[in-house]
Picture 1 (cartoon, one colour):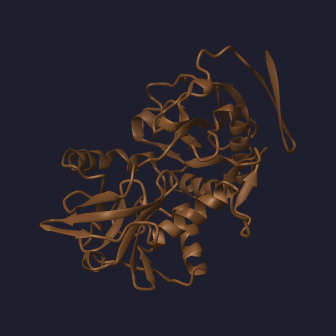
Picture 2: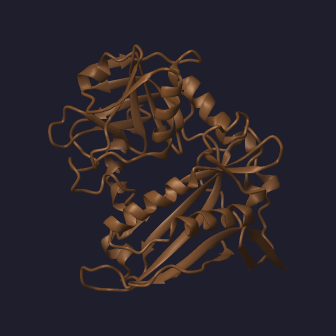
Length: 357
Protein backbone atom coordinates (compact mmCIF):
# COMPACT_ATOMS: atom_id res chain seq x y z
CA UNK A 1 0.00 0.00 0.00
CA UNK A 2 1.32 3.47 -0.88
CA UNK A 3 0.75 6.37 1.52
CA UNK A 4 1.27 10.08 0.85
CA UNK A 5 2.30 12.62 3.48
CA UNK A 6 1.98 16.35 2.82
CA UNK A 7 3.93 18.82 4.94
CA UNK A 8 4.00 22.38 3.67
CA UNK A 9 5.67 22.29 0.27
CA UNK A 10 6.79 18.70 0.72
CA UNK A 11 5.00 15.59 -0.48
CA UNK A 12 6.51 12.26 0.42
CA UNK A 13 5.49 8.89 -0.98
CA UNK A 14 6.34 5.77 0.99
CA UNK A 15 5.56 2.10 0.76
CA UNK A 16 3.55 0.96 3.76
CA UNK A 17 4.26 -2.65 4.73
CA UNK A 18 2.22 -4.70 7.17
CA UNK A 19 3.52 -4.33 10.73
CA UNK A 20 3.01 -6.99 13.37
CA UNK A 21 3.16 -4.64 16.36
CA UNK A 22 0.26 -2.29 16.86
CA UNK A 23 0.39 0.98 18.75
CA UNK A 24 -2.89 -0.15 20.29
CA UNK A 25 -0.95 -2.96 22.00
CA UNK A 26 1.32 -0.54 23.85
CA UNK A 27 0.53 -0.15 27.53
CA UNK A 28 0.80 3.63 27.68
CA UNK A 29 0.56 3.59 31.49
CA UNK A 30 3.71 1.49 31.75
CA UNK A 31 5.73 3.37 29.15
CA UNK A 32 9.34 3.93 30.21
CA UNK A 33 12.34 5.38 28.40
CA UNK A 34 13.08 2.30 26.31
CA UNK A 35 13.09 1.71 22.57
CA UNK A 36 9.73 0.81 21.05
CA UNK A 37 10.26 0.31 17.33
CA UNK A 38 7.91 2.36 15.18
CA UNK A 39 6.97 2.30 11.49
CA UNK A 40 9.24 4.66 9.58
CA UNK A 41 12.60 6.39 9.66
CA UNK A 42 13.81 9.30 7.56
CA UNK A 43 17.08 8.96 5.59
CA UNK A 44 19.02 11.53 3.56
CA UNK A 45 22.56 11.15 2.18
CA UNK A 46 25.23 13.60 1.08
CA UNK A 47 28.74 13.27 -0.39
CA UNK A 48 31.61 15.29 1.06
CA UNK A 49 31.71 18.71 -0.53
CA UNK A 50 28.04 18.57 -1.59
CA UNK A 51 24.87 19.74 0.13
CA UNK A 52 22.01 17.68 1.45
CA UNK A 53 19.03 17.80 -0.93
CA UNK A 54 16.14 15.37 -0.53
CA UNK A 55 15.57 12.42 1.72
CA UNK A 56 12.89 9.75 2.01
CA UNK A 57 10.85 7.83 4.54
CA UNK A 58 11.76 4.15 4.76
CA UNK A 59 10.38 1.33 6.90
CA UNK A 60 12.25 1.29 10.20
CA UNK A 61 15.02 -1.30 10.15
CA UNK A 62 18.71 -1.99 10.14
CA UNK A 63 21.01 0.00 7.90
CA UNK A 64 23.94 -1.27 5.85
CA UNK A 65 27.26 0.40 6.65
CA UNK A 66 30.88 -0.18 5.66
CA UNK A 67 33.15 -1.54 8.39
CA UNK A 68 35.58 1.21 7.37
CA UNK A 69 33.04 4.02 7.77
CA UNK A 70 33.99 7.22 9.53
CA UNK A 71 31.48 6.73 12.34
CA UNK A 72 32.67 3.20 13.20
CA UNK A 73 36.40 3.90 12.99
CA UNK A 74 36.77 7.48 14.17
CA UNK A 75 33.48 8.39 15.83
CA UNK A 76 32.55 11.06 13.29
CA UNK A 77 28.96 11.62 14.27
CA UNK A 78 26.55 13.81 16.20
CA UNK A 79 22.94 13.42 17.27
CA UNK A 80 19.97 15.37 18.55
CA UNK A 81 16.95 14.62 20.70
CA UNK A 82 13.51 16.21 20.65
CA UNK A 83 9.90 15.28 21.36
CA UNK A 84 6.44 15.47 19.82
CA UNK A 85 3.45 15.80 22.16
CA UNK A 86 -0.23 15.17 21.59
CA UNK A 87 -2.68 17.86 22.74
CA UNK A 88 -6.19 17.57 24.21
CA UNK A 89 -7.71 18.69 20.90
CA UNK A 90 -5.77 16.11 18.86
CA UNK A 91 -2.96 18.25 17.50
CA UNK A 92 0.68 17.18 17.60
CA UNK A 93 3.25 19.75 18.75
CA UNK A 94 7.01 19.97 18.40
CA UNK A 95 9.01 22.09 20.83
CA UNK A 96 11.58 24.49 19.35
CA UNK A 97 12.81 22.11 16.61
CA UNK A 98 14.68 24.95 14.90
CA UNK A 99 16.98 25.12 17.94
CA UNK A 100 17.87 21.45 17.46
CA UNK A 101 18.59 22.14 13.79
CA UNK A 102 20.90 25.02 14.69
CA UNK A 103 22.70 22.96 17.31
CA UNK A 104 23.21 20.12 14.85
CA UNK A 105 24.74 22.57 12.38
CA UNK A 106 27.16 23.90 15.01
CA UNK A 107 28.13 20.36 15.91
CA UNK A 108 28.58 19.40 12.27
CA UNK A 109 30.89 22.36 11.68
CA UNK A 110 33.04 21.28 14.64
CA UNK A 111 33.16 17.67 13.40
CA UNK A 112 33.94 18.67 9.79
CA UNK A 113 30.66 17.37 8.37
CA UNK A 114 28.05 18.81 6.01
CA UNK A 115 24.67 19.28 7.68
CA UNK A 116 21.05 19.75 6.62
CA UNK A 117 19.79 23.31 6.68
CA UNK A 118 17.52 24.20 9.58
CA UNK A 119 14.51 24.08 7.24
CA UNK A 120 15.53 20.66 5.97
CA UNK A 121 16.00 19.45 9.54
CA UNK A 122 12.62 20.69 10.72
CA UNK A 123 10.76 19.34 7.69
CA UNK A 124 12.45 15.95 8.08
CA UNK A 125 11.33 15.88 11.72
CA UNK A 126 7.78 16.76 10.68
CA UNK A 127 7.71 14.00 8.06
CA UNK A 128 8.99 11.47 10.58
CA UNK A 129 6.35 12.39 13.15
CA UNK A 130 3.51 12.43 10.66
CA UNK A 131 4.50 9.01 9.29
CA UNK A 132 4.59 7.64 12.85
CA UNK A 133 1.74 9.65 14.35
CA UNK A 134 -0.08 6.56 15.65
CA UNK A 135 2.85 6.12 18.03
CA UNK A 136 2.45 9.54 19.68
CA UNK A 137 1.14 8.66 23.16
CA UNK A 138 -2.22 9.93 24.43
CA UNK A 139 -2.23 13.17 26.41
CA UNK A 140 -0.45 12.78 29.73
CA UNK A 141 0.98 9.34 28.88
CA UNK A 142 4.30 10.40 27.37
CA UNK A 143 5.70 11.72 24.11
CA UNK A 144 7.24 10.60 20.83
CA UNK A 145 11.00 10.92 21.22
CA UNK A 146 12.88 11.66 17.99
CA UNK A 147 16.56 10.89 17.50
CA UNK A 148 18.17 12.67 14.51
CA UNK A 149 21.62 11.30 13.65
CA UNK A 150 24.30 12.77 11.39
CA UNK A 151 27.08 10.26 10.80
CA UNK A 152 30.03 9.67 8.51
CA UNK A 153 29.03 6.53 6.62
CA UNK A 154 31.49 6.64 3.72
CA UNK A 155 34.46 4.21 3.82
CA UNK A 156 38.03 5.31 4.54
CA UNK A 157 41.17 3.99 6.18
CA UNK A 158 43.27 7.04 7.01
CA UNK A 159 42.31 9.63 9.59
CA UNK A 160 40.18 12.06 7.59
CA UNK A 161 36.57 13.22 7.17
CA UNK A 162 34.36 10.54 5.63
CA UNK A 163 33.56 10.76 1.89
CA UNK A 164 29.79 10.34 2.51
CA UNK A 165 27.33 11.27 5.23
CA UNK A 166 23.91 10.05 6.32
CA UNK A 167 21.26 12.08 8.12
CA UNK A 168 18.74 9.74 9.74
CA UNK A 169 15.80 10.20 12.11
CA UNK A 170 14.08 7.41 14.02
CA UNK A 171 11.59 7.69 16.86
CA UNK A 172 10.08 5.87 19.82
CA UNK A 173 7.23 6.57 22.23
CA UNK A 174 8.64 7.23 25.70
CA UNK A 175 7.53 7.93 29.23
CA UNK A 176 9.57 9.41 32.07
CA UNK A 177 13.36 9.09 31.96
CA UNK A 178 13.58 9.05 35.75
CA UNK A 179 10.93 8.01 38.25
CA UNK A 180 10.80 10.64 40.99
CA UNK A 181 13.44 12.99 42.42
CA UNK A 182 17.10 12.19 41.80
CA UNK A 183 19.88 11.26 44.17
CA UNK A 184 23.18 12.18 42.54
CA UNK A 185 26.78 11.22 43.16
CA UNK A 186 29.53 13.73 42.41
CA UNK A 187 32.17 12.06 40.25
CA UNK A 188 35.60 13.43 41.25
CA UNK A 189 37.91 11.04 39.41
CA UNK A 190 36.49 10.75 35.89
CA UNK A 191 35.56 13.67 33.62
CA UNK A 192 33.09 14.01 30.74
CA UNK A 193 34.90 16.79 28.84
CA UNK A 194 38.09 18.84 28.86
CA UNK A 195 37.78 22.34 30.29
CA UNK A 196 37.62 25.32 27.98
CA UNK A 197 36.43 25.82 24.42
CA UNK A 198 38.87 23.52 22.62
CA UNK A 199 37.04 20.24 23.15
CA UNK A 200 33.69 18.81 22.13
CA UNK A 201 31.75 19.06 25.41
CA UNK A 202 29.58 21.82 23.95
CA UNK A 203 28.25 19.72 21.06
CA UNK A 204 26.31 16.46 20.91
CA UNK A 205 29.18 14.40 19.56
CA UNK A 206 28.59 10.67 19.88
CA UNK A 207 32.06 10.43 21.44
CA UNK A 208 30.93 12.39 24.50
CA UNK A 209 28.57 9.77 25.85
CA UNK A 210 30.17 6.32 26.09
CA UNK A 211 32.95 7.66 28.40
CA UNK A 212 30.33 8.27 31.13
CA UNK A 213 29.35 4.58 31.25
CA UNK A 214 31.98 3.62 33.83
CA UNK A 215 31.00 6.36 36.26
CA UNK A 216 27.25 5.95 35.87
CA UNK A 217 27.37 2.15 36.08
CA UNK A 218 29.29 2.36 39.35
CA UNK A 219 26.93 5.03 40.71
CA UNK A 220 23.79 3.06 39.89
CA UNK A 221 25.28 -0.08 41.42
CA UNK A 222 25.54 1.91 44.65
CA UNK A 223 21.96 3.16 44.56
CA UNK A 224 22.39 6.55 42.88
CA UNK A 225 20.22 7.86 40.03
CA UNK A 226 23.00 9.58 38.10
CA UNK A 227 26.41 11.23 38.38
CA UNK A 228 27.37 14.89 38.41
CA UNK A 229 30.67 15.70 36.73
CA UNK A 230 33.18 18.38 37.74
CA UNK A 231 35.44 20.55 35.62
CA UNK A 232 38.61 18.74 34.59
CA UNK A 233 40.92 21.73 35.18
CA UNK A 234 40.39 22.21 38.92
CA UNK A 235 37.76 19.70 40.06
CA UNK A 236 36.11 22.51 42.04
CA UNK A 237 33.16 23.43 39.83
CA UNK A 238 30.09 21.47 38.78
CA UNK A 239 29.33 20.93 35.10
CA UNK A 240 26.65 18.45 34.00
CA UNK A 241 25.05 15.17 34.92
CA UNK A 242 25.50 12.32 32.43
CA UNK A 243 22.91 13.66 29.98
CA UNK A 244 21.39 16.85 31.41
CA UNK A 245 22.15 20.37 32.59
CA UNK A 246 21.98 21.33 36.27
CA UNK A 247 20.66 24.33 38.24
CA UNK A 248 20.97 25.34 41.89
CA UNK A 249 18.62 27.68 43.75
CA UNK A 250 19.52 29.89 46.71
CA UNK A 251 16.85 32.32 47.82
CA UNK A 252 15.69 34.24 44.75
CA UNK A 253 18.79 33.40 42.71
CA UNK A 254 19.04 30.54 40.23
CA UNK A 255 22.53 29.61 39.03
CA UNK A 256 23.66 27.26 36.28
CA UNK A 257 27.12 26.56 34.85
CA UNK A 258 27.96 28.95 32.02
CA UNK A 259 28.39 27.82 28.41
CA UNK A 260 32.18 27.88 28.16
CA UNK A 261 32.58 25.19 25.50
CA UNK A 262 32.36 22.34 27.99
CA UNK A 263 28.66 22.59 28.86
CA UNK A 264 26.07 21.45 26.32
CA UNK A 265 23.78 24.36 25.34
CA UNK A 266 20.58 22.56 26.24
CA UNK A 267 17.36 23.73 24.61
CA UNK A 268 15.41 22.89 27.75
CA UNK A 269 18.08 24.76 29.74
CA UNK A 270 17.63 27.83 27.54
CA UNK A 271 13.85 27.67 27.92
CA UNK A 272 13.97 27.20 31.70
CA UNK A 273 16.22 30.22 32.12
CA UNK A 274 13.62 32.36 30.36
CA UNK A 275 10.72 30.88 32.35
CA UNK A 276 12.54 31.40 35.67
CA UNK A 277 13.14 35.05 34.80
CA UNK A 278 9.43 35.38 33.99
CA UNK A 279 8.69 34.12 37.52
CA UNK A 280 10.81 36.91 39.00
CA UNK A 281 14.00 34.99 39.74
CA UNK A 282 17.48 36.28 39.09
CA UNK A 283 19.24 33.81 36.82
CA UNK A 284 23.03 33.69 36.69
CA UNK A 285 25.08 31.71 34.17
CA UNK A 286 28.47 31.35 35.84
CA UNK A 287 30.91 28.95 37.44
CA UNK A 288 29.18 27.16 40.32
CA UNK A 289 31.45 25.63 42.95
CA UNK A 290 30.85 22.39 44.79
CA UNK A 291 30.72 24.39 48.03
CA UNK A 292 27.90 26.59 46.68
CA UNK A 293 25.99 23.55 45.51
CA UNK A 294 26.19 21.97 48.96
CA UNK A 295 24.54 25.00 50.63
CA UNK A 296 21.84 25.58 47.99
CA UNK A 297 18.15 25.37 48.90
CA UNK A 298 17.16 23.44 45.81
CA UNK A 299 18.76 21.68 42.85
CA UNK A 300 17.30 20.36 39.62
CA UNK A 301 18.27 18.97 36.23
CA UNK A 302 16.94 19.85 32.77
CA UNK A 303 17.02 18.16 29.39
CA UNK A 304 14.85 16.81 26.59
CA UNK A 305 14.72 13.37 28.18
CA UNK A 306 14.47 14.38 31.86
CA UNK A 307 12.39 17.56 31.18
CA UNK A 308 12.78 19.24 34.62
CA UNK A 309 13.66 16.84 37.42
CA UNK A 310 14.27 17.81 41.04
CA UNK A 311 17.29 16.52 42.94
CA UNK A 312 16.47 15.08 46.36
CA UNK A 313 20.07 14.60 47.48
CA UNK A 314 23.65 14.71 46.33
CA UNK A 315 26.71 12.92 47.70
CA UNK A 316 30.23 14.33 47.47
CA UNK A 317 32.94 12.23 49.09
CA UNK A 318 31.73 11.81 52.70
CA UNK A 319 29.09 14.56 52.55
CA UNK A 320 25.43 14.12 51.60
CA UNK A 321 23.18 17.12 51.08
CA UNK A 322 19.37 16.93 50.98
CA UNK A 323 17.32 19.46 48.99
CA UNK A 324 13.77 20.71 48.93
CA UNK A 325 11.40 18.74 46.71
CA UNK A 326 7.65 18.76 46.17
CA UNK A 327 4.98 20.87 44.47
CA UNK A 328 6.05 24.18 46.06
CA UNK A 329 9.59 24.08 44.69
CA UNK A 330 10.73 26.19 41.77
CA UNK A 331 11.55 23.07 39.73
CA UNK A 332 7.98 21.80 40.10
CA UNK A 333 6.56 25.14 38.97
CA UNK A 334 8.93 25.31 36.02
CA UNK A 335 8.16 21.75 34.97
CA UNK A 336 4.41 22.40 35.12
CA UNK A 337 4.78 25.53 32.97
CA UNK A 338 7.14 23.93 30.45
CA UNK A 339 5.05 20.77 30.02
CA UNK A 340 1.92 22.91 29.80
CA UNK A 341 3.40 24.79 26.85
CA UNK A 342 4.73 21.61 25.21
CA UNK A 343 1.36 19.88 25.41
CA UNK A 344 -0.80 22.87 24.46
CA UNK A 345 -2.41 23.11 27.91
CA UNK A 346 -0.94 26.60 28.40
CA UNK A 347 -0.90 29.38 25.84
CA UNK A 348 2.39 29.52 23.97
CA UNK A 349 3.12 33.25 24.15
CA UNK A 350 6.73 32.69 23.11
CA UNK A 351 6.07 30.90 19.80
CA UNK A 352 8.08 27.91 20.95
CA UNK A 353 5.77 25.18 19.63
CA UNK A 354 5.21 24.05 16.06
CA UNK A 355 1.95 22.33 15.11
CA UNK A 356 2.22 19.50 12.60
CA UNK A 357 -1.31 18.10 12.67
